[in-house]
Length: 138
Image (cartoon, rainbow, N blue to C red):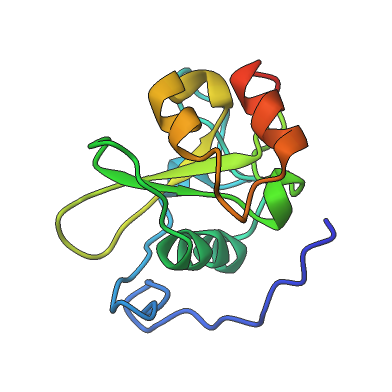
């Protein structure tokens, strides 16, 4: 891991935050790195405070998601590995319409082409990684 994760302290209620927009993050135990592998549940390779950092950055770098009802997060131009199972480099945080949020690692195959194409001019994604996203290689 090359990303420089800041020191983040868990709140008394188990959440992290708030973000600049006042949102809180609550890790889901079944997505944590120490969780037992389950069908249809990806696991972070990141500790909960690091997961919050991905959420915080996703909240800052919000890119249009065309109604998926959530945020996509990644670090260091998608060069940072977030997921334990298939070295996922993207996280999805479904919109709960209430705080706290939670999230989990995903692969580009789970993102619609329309959404990926909307990221073409994002300053946070290199041309190389944009092409890799379209080919579903990330």
